[in-house]
Length: 179
Image 1: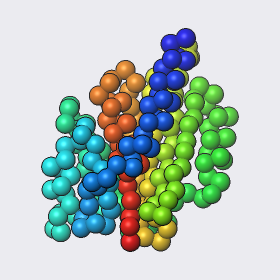
Image 2: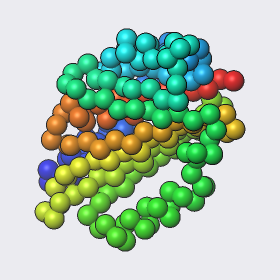
Image 3: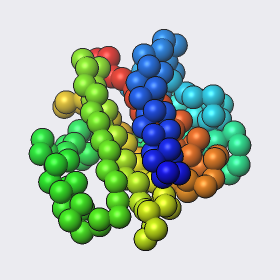
């Protein structure tokens, strides 16, 4: 019963995320190379400091306002580095379903003229069927221009960890390249 309720809450939270991605007022990273919303959960000044002409690199560090959580978003100028083959998702999920039966998989892809975002989510269960870990892979890219990637594993018993992971998803869903 608890597992069913927890999974229902996870899926409900994920259904709300695309609405956040449509909001205006996006932050222009590296002079507009990449635009995205910075969720309130993150330390916005630290991201802004990394976006100047001298500090602009092939990635940026995201820090949470609460706790000491931080992750690096990798950015590449060519999408070949992170783009997945068309049938990658189905093959990958089939392979892991066979090898790891105690794992639930969820994925989606959102495409528009400003880029494509793919989120792969893996819910790891213990032998009793209780949720023990959540892994997410975030990909964003636009054909022949650039891509961004981040992997994150969250402890479902740590609310700040889950909030950090959801804020990362909001950030990736809001990404766009408009050139």
